[in-house]
Length: 151
Ligand SMILES: [Zn+2]
Image (cartoon, rainbow, N blue to C red; front, top):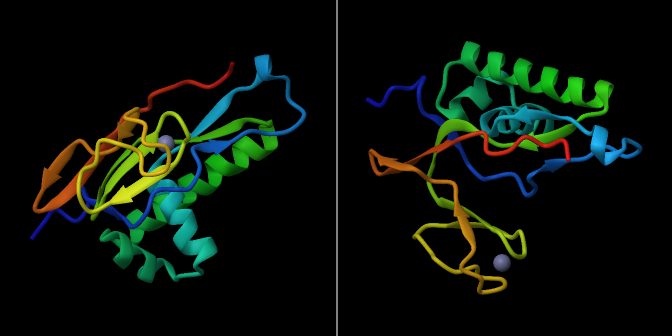
């Protein structure tokens, strides 16, 4: 039995890396980090309209853990909206069935069953992999918070 609390299961990466607000000078722009699993919690509960118990099952975590993630996601998004901050979607610890890549040239998000070394859209080899570990036949993804926005 895998440790259910440690392995938060995600189906797909978000299509974008984050959001920028209008009307805030770039030099003053600060950002809020939304972890991948927080994004997923928001997606499942507010976009797919799943009950928390159903969403928790999808992510392979307990219902209370899901609700904590979801609350944190909403607080982070609300803070960005109210304070006029950018949202960077990055970081977290979770498992996914597929390999996830981001192309550094055309910004395509690539989700694939098998590892690749070139972008399928622009053929660039400037790919950032989002997968660090493979455990139990699943890819465990640990993505560090890579950047601070604000420029
Ligand atoms: Zn590309």
